Length: 345
Image 1 (cartoon, one colour):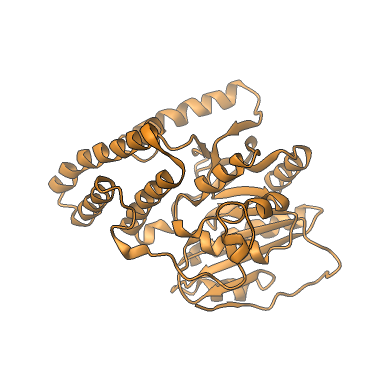
Image 2 (cartoon, one colour):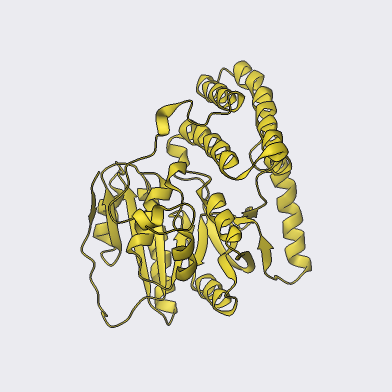
């Protein structure tokens, strides 16, 4: 596996970046103009240096070439195979030089106030190990930007068959709360990896994202390890970033569906034990059993096969039952960021 980097022009070699933005692309060419256009505006509005690292996971739609041609100031890393989200993030972490490290999805639109606000908060609160802001849909309505630890109860509101209804109710209640109270920091259990900022010392202490997740679950795991090290996770609702959710997963929805549940089972093996783990497994099994007749009646053969695979994984409690997503080879130069228990090699 090889990774190549584009030349990076340095107009001001004396100035070290305060913030490193790390973003992962996979067949996301349509996101290139809006993402980097928003970052350019933020860079112009802020009085500190920002470096941007884009890792392309072997896109087949010309994403990397579009970035290199339209935005030559971006530090571009090209992978010749899809290493997965977590592994690619670790490549960005290894190459970044900023004091603050921001994982930002390419379907997000950065703005200067949110970037500066998160940095200022982290500066003032050294025991906060990660910060995020409110993520908004394109229509301005809020997303679930943070969550509780995976459990029987949280599962029904996030991934289950009935979760769309639960999310709609939560969204309406959230809008009312925003209108009726001041936006104050909320300390949470984990933040979505679509927009997640970590101070460099914390990231170096904890290590990078666990690359065995490939996609999904790596943000939950990272936040869990940050909390286990004694830091807090802060959601800052006063700052907002637009997130056009799920653009990459639309290219392969069945792969994303199966990978989501495989990652959840991997997380359970790593962090949950006893009754909480069993209860969550039973919740997924019950949910899949509810889905089976719906997809059978709808003749949705691909989703039906995915549901059957998830049922088998949870029945046998084996996330590697289907080897379609085996861990990729370690990318060059990222070994210390691939440590999953806070120890650097």
